[in-house]
Length: 241
Length: 222
Image 1: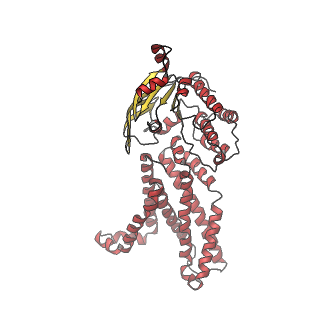
Image 2: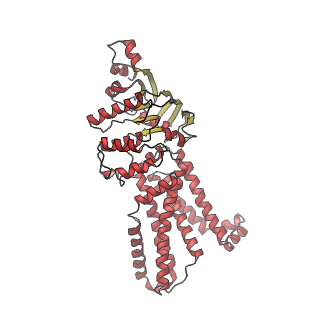
Image 3: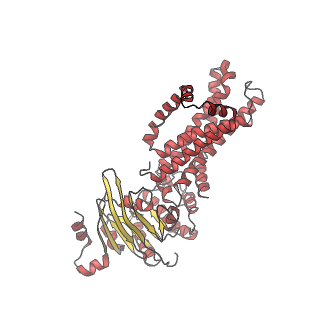
């Protein structure tokens, strides 16, 4: 893994979009370096839409997203060089082998770490010669993790990264994200609807409900203020009815 | 370089498709020719382009379905690649495959002609090959534009009104020419083949620009 790097936060300012009946309303947040931020919400709360809007994959109606002075819309390529995005579904070319796919993705990034990609492929037990279409859902998530991490992005944007992983892989992936944030100083934003994942690794939690941010708090300070009786589940249910 | 990598990806994914496609076209060509042997001298060259027209569509279908089947466009859009590069690469890959297909077909046709198997005009000239390629690239560009701009469902229905408009323009061309006072312009195009080809290329360019604009603004990817 790479050494710690000084970084700017990912700044989301009044981001909004209307998609049919659903509206994501003036979302503002900072994703701080060296911290794991959890985006928590029900199914359909707008987590995936928010991630896609941040990446500029879906066109926004309003607001800005920037990282180190690079706007996600005007400086699209520079922005995406610095952000690793893991999508909830694995959108791959099923005819490619794992090795071909990793080689294909590596060509688009200036700072691709070949050793890291090889190390991750080995540690996830991913066979390089197997076709992507023949992999299980969990293995596809692992391939996705490899290509998301191997270009050593400043910010990691992960949409339900543990979806489809077995318990061991899930545990290892969460630990890896924590290491990437705390030891390498990168910013991690991951969306989930599993409270235990948030409690396990997050430093900060953002509650999203029906396209609106209901809370944006530091977990250690919440625990400190409320004392040992504090529970994330109760906090979540109070704010997200 | 991104464009080159994306084109290489498409060519790699379609590498097993090109040879069967060409064999199928040649088989279809001779199957048609055997059914109307007496008319072949008059329709041989047109029939070749007719068969290749189906290939223009199939090549587009194959390269687009590779993206749509697993919604891979969502993945490509997350890479540090601009919509303009994605579109140019998609057109580039299609044009390479269409160019390869037409070149091989025309070469085979030329060989057959030279060996005396096809006693028909026209002789292959560089102008004829250039015009044939441009015609097929334009057809293919039309299909690629529809599939990039619209979803699969839209792409199924959109060609019909467009083809209706196109057919109507062709049927009423003389009247349109007079109404818009285009006689001198059309006459000059008839006398300047290269100007006409440039016009077709301008249409292709306009389709590429339209796709880039649409892809950046798209909200739902098939």
